[in-house]
Image (cartoon, rainbow, N blue to C red; front, side, top):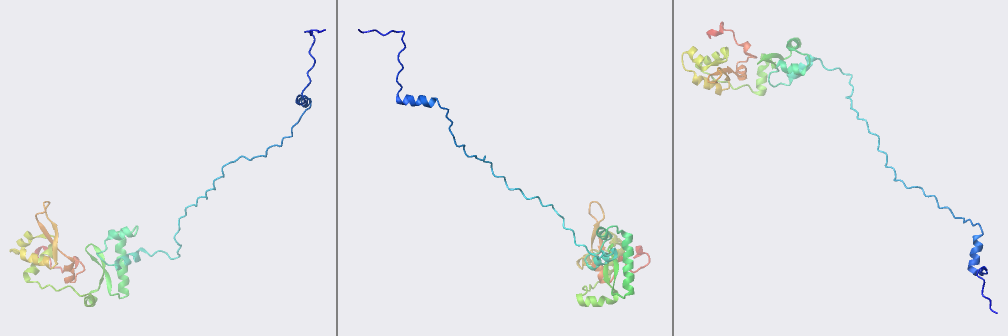
Length: 241
């Protein structure tokens, strides 16, 4: 007889498959996988930049110490005179020697000349054109001219000498004043003296520059062996020359 199955009867357990049985067995075991820890990797950082060298402190090179004291102002003045050139003006000396004024310069010149005289030197300091020059004494001038050649002698007529004397003693003087004093025209004499380099135009007498005045030149002092215009012979009142 065939019996229909009871629906309330649980079905018989299914036979596990070999694979399912193994899986079930594995599920009942506490497994601990021994995983090898990863190697420690050091973090990568950029290589540090090389340190900059320390700044070298700037040093001023001190001048070498010298035990020699600086020369006195009097010797500096003497050296400046020995350099030659145009007359040494007091303002030039004062700019080169601190604290050296006109009075100090004059005193130094006097002391140097006193030393030159005591030592019988062939030169002395003379005034010229508002300054000072180192000049050979008159008794040695022939030696100088023989060595360097003296200025060419200018042969002047008496009228030219008359005009030259007026210019020398009354400079700066205009042609009109010379003509008035001489009572004749002096244009030719003035041109001759200018051409010889004995006189030159020194300034113009008026603001508009129409009147020309004349004065002597350094060549005039050389020709007549004068250190300065102060050495001109005194002929009484120069206004009467």
